[in-house]
Each structure stands twice: as C-alpha cells, then as structure tokens.
Amino acid sequence: MTLNGHHRTVLVTGASRGIGKAICHKLLEEGCNVIAVSRSINGLFAGVGGITTYPLDLSDIKQLPNELRRLHKQHPEITDLVCNAGVGRFGSIEEFSPEQIQGLIDLNLTAHILTAR
Ligand SMILES: NC(=O)c1ccc[n+]([C@@H]2O[C@H](COP(=O)([O-])OP(=O)(O)OC[C@H]3O[C@@H](n4cnc5c(N)ncnc54)[C@H](OP(=O)(O)O)[C@@H]3O)[C@@H](O)[C@H]2O)c1
Image (cartoon, rainbow, N blue to C red; front, side, top):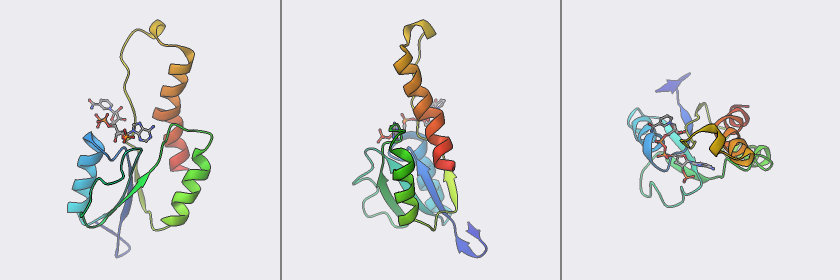
C-alpha cells in the first residue's frame, strides 16, 4: 500500500498480541512499514523487516501527550493509525469502582483520542 507513491507507515497500538499483532503482520504483507506500540513490545518482532517497536503505556493519560509528541518527533513518517490497544472487563456495573471505570475510559477512549490528535 502506498500514499502518493510512498510506502505507508502505520502506527498500530496494542501490537504485542492478539488482533493488533495480526494486523501488524497483515500490514507488513501488504508492503506497509509499521510502528508497533504496547507496554511489552520490546524484543517482539525481532528480525522482522519493516517494523519498529516502541514501548509505551497508553493508560498514563497525564504523560501521554508528551510521550506522543516524542514518538511523533522520532517517527514523523507516520501516515496511518490503528487504535487497537485496550482491555475488556466484564461484570455488573455496580461491581466496578469509580477508579476502575475511569481507568477503562482512559485506556479505551481518551488514549485513542489523544493518539489520533
Ligand atoms: N477479542 C475480542 O473478542 C474483542 C472484543 C471487543 C473488543 N476488543 C478490543 O479489541 C482490541 C484488541 O483485542 P485483543 O483480543 O487482541 O486484546 P489482547 O490480546 O488483550 O491485546 C491487547 C493489546 O493492548 C495492549 N495494551 C493493553 N493495555 C495497554 C496499555 N496500558 N498501554 C499500551 N498498550 C496496552 C496489550 O499490550 P501490552 O500488554 O504489551 O501493553 C496488547 O497488545 C482491544 O482493545 C479489545 O478491548 C476485543
């Protein structure tokens, strides 16, 4: 996949396993470059061409804008974004503390909005 004749460079969050990891492999197959983000991404994809790993905790909302600025400075070539990182917690709403609810919203919503911004 190209954009104006150049390879696309896709930032994929939650790239260490599951759906995000599968998306990374698919994008590499399609000829994209990938910036793979998660907390435990270091050492994964070792020896795989076209992919750069970038460890980042997306739940630290206070630090996130600065961290994302640093990431973008290192990788101004990013053309596309896959917001995939997240967690699912299952149970009745009364079983969740306000802190747990805030944590879910921070990671599953606010972090994605800040990353897209
Ligand atoms: N699988 C399903 O049936 C399903 C259904 C509905 C929605 N979803 C959503 O789809 C997305 C992918 O699902 P999945 O099943 O592939 O999930 P998964 O296997 O649990 O993987 C989640 C990914 O998010 C990353 N992540 C978690 N917390 C993070 C944090 N604080 N900062 C940065 N990265 C973080 C994890 O990496 P690290 O642990 O290395 O940080 C991991 O790479 C998730 O957002 C999930 O909630 C999945």
